[in-house]
Amino acid sequence: MIGPSGNVRVYLACGVTDMRRGIDGLSALVETVVKEAPGSGAIFGFRGKRADRIKLLWWDGQGFCLFYKILERGY
Image 1 (spheres, rainbow, N blue to C red):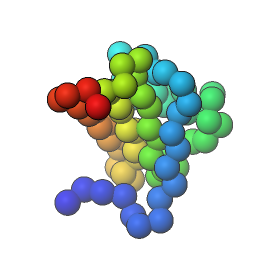
Image 2 (image 1 turned 135 degrees about the horizontal axis):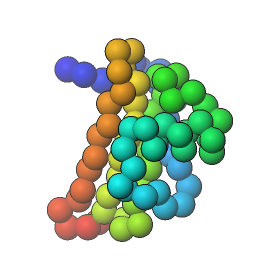
Image 3 (image 1 turned 90 degrees about the vertical axis):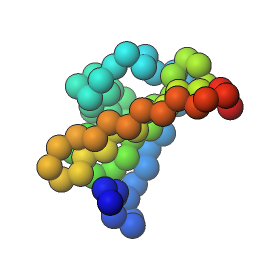
Image 4 (image 1 turned 135 degrees about the vertical axis):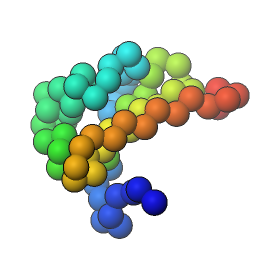
């Protein structure tokens, strides 16, 4: 199973993020806003304008993983 180690930092972005952004765009946000290296091993969470969408960006040691979740009922 793929997953982070037990002691991983998690950062959640305040406000709304454009969900059209991919790995490169979200990595740029991490560098400029959070002032953290996207490849640090931390998990970075972003919420869309609609509250039913979230993206997680994570470096697994070999490359970036981008997880995208859309809730079925919107809550």
